[in-house]
Image (cartoon, rainbow, N blue to C red; front, side, top):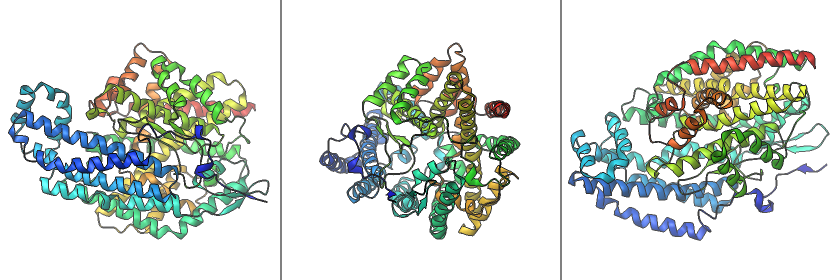
Length: 602
């Protein structure tokens, strides 16, 4: 029997791929823009040392630096999208490498700006704003620099750090190539005897398979490969953590976590509150796991049993075309302004749909200020993929609104805010499905999907956040991050989270080795805080509270024009408190109780 193989990039239908020609018509146009920016960087020294020369010189230098950022951002995004669509394509590996080098070169060329700003007194800086009206738009941008005075290094040291960015990024780059291009996963046998080539995308699909033997084979087959490379993965992760801790130390932060969170003025208490509240409610997760074990009618529940539908074969699935229709229906409550952007995303080829050989795993929304907010998918006909599509659409609409309503200087948003937009959409979709699907089996499946999603987004990501903080803390104390050390701690943490009803599978101890988000620098906790905040916002929108939708759209349009905590307060959620996480836990318990009751009638 023939082995199922992924299609080549060249064989895909054009309409199912993203159209990157609006960024650059072809690679030659990229080369031209690349050369122009290289030439423009030579002008950087002309502005260096001029900030004390008055408000006009200050404005010119600031706008030169922003122009460089804007141009390199577009070049970098184009190269990484091209590379991600087929990571085995050496042409685009080279393009991405060139753009990464130019990004480092650009950062180094203008790295003097912030340190030089901070050589000026506060009174001198703000006098410039009184003298030059064109500076007014940059007040918040400059205020953030002034607030960070204690952590900015002298200009020559900042230039040195900026020039070393490729070195600091090397562990992530090595992990990405190894994980996405070089690892060869085994062929396993499907439920009908067919041969299935494991890949990242196929693995996720097989974890939802109803045939337990297939799930077990996929689980053990995947982790056998990670086990073979566990020492290499430990070394890449350890090197990455050392880089974070080093940079935090030289910038005079107490920890890498403080350094990361301070970029967006997020109090560390937000992180600690999340971990505390989630740990307090771990009995809810244990209760859900116990229900899963009961419904699967198994004496032993394994980690490869955690994603399969608890009521057998999924009673609902969607082709991509059906998912597009369903997404449009669910998001109607977001109003006409929001839905015009959704319509454009589907009609203007913003989305790269199909998994192909060498394509980056997973899904994301990415773009630059001067590009569309593109979406990468690896489509399979499942409910989960519908949720992923709606999730990434939330990111892309957020990006579109931000870039359309903010100048370039504020035309992005922090990761802390990003996951709120995407998971609000997921909550909206869940409620829509529960309102429109009356079949008990379908409702039970949707409820289970919600509970699984909550488990994966709040419980699981908080577990990741605990692990990430632990390894940074351990390294800061001088503890070697060996594969054995990482695996032992991760195994114990996994047991704490999932509780006594789950077997302690040896393979799961290696899960840390395959998580790309551990290379994102205190990123994962924001999934959990974001989902919790999204739950609160979705509740307001669905209840059609007076002003709720307008407040939400204003959040989507705010970008970096204010600190994230303040943006969310204006949207109606105070994330410095525990209430919003506690409320999310109440929703989880309510839907868990509904599922527990519903399954007794099936």
